Image (cartoon, rainbow, N blue to C red):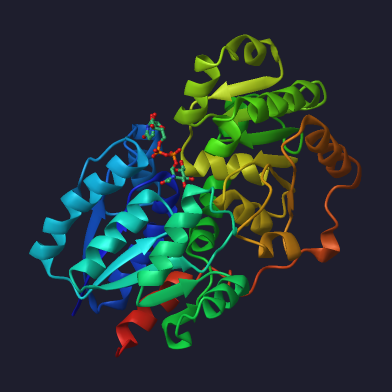
Length: 367
Ligand code: UD1
């Protein structure tokens, strides 16, 4: 049996770890320990996803919670080290690019345990993003790197990573989407919020570069003030963003938008249903760029760069500058032209079987 510790910590990790845990179980060659760092801890940012996606209850929850980057990363490392010493795994597997990813990765390699990174090689080339630092560092210490798109392979090769360590396997987040699409279609989320298919847009925003920078955040809010006159907006709001709205006196402007619904973060199935039926998405998330590509829903990404270029070259994604004008320009383009459907392809290997390929590769790994 291969002994493996699987790590998850923040919301976008949960949909990635779900198919991996399932594939390890089905493969039969693995003894797993699931560790939740507790980076995200609210019921609707964490437990709800475990219930909906049938992720086994974590064997260990480190209950780290929120703190500055340094403190959060250090606390995770301190608490994770004894877990690794005790379980004595052959591998530690981390996913994505959050602080839990690099913290647990560092602990593993310092103890001489092989590290696996799922979603390796993505690069925004923007070192101001905390996630970019986490990605570059995690990849540089990983023994096995599982990649979602060709750009990831190219980036790793350019950085001098041994090609034998790189495996282009597809996208575990899309495994979860495809496995849950039908179930999500049963959700009553549209009627709960009084929405009609294709007659609303969904917003998510949480990146510090957008919501901690008041000048940019106000540009975005101004754009919403125009768009909501035209179409309903539903905005499941991240705790960081909600805090910033209150802290910066934006409550009044937000409340004045009659067609903007601010709601609490919602579960995976409701969110997938909302996205599937939306006219468009407005977001700064990483994963949503990929999900909308598979769903064929136009996506305006309020960022200057993306680490997921395939969502632009083959998918429905477009980058939008953080100015009111540019947001409105792209909004009217999408409204008038929809998405040029003939350019949209399913990215290579985004077929729902990435986690199986990962399990098989690890089971056969001789290095
Ligand atoms: C983290 C990830 C980011 C990911 C995002 C998804 C890092 C560096 N960032 O950002 O890549 O896209 O998760 O959500 O790891 N909070 C709560 N309840 C929670 C969790 C957080 O109220 O369950 C609040 C706290 O005020 C906290 C703030 O949200 O300080 C930010 O949480 P944190 O985990 O530091 O980063 P995210 O912004 O969520």
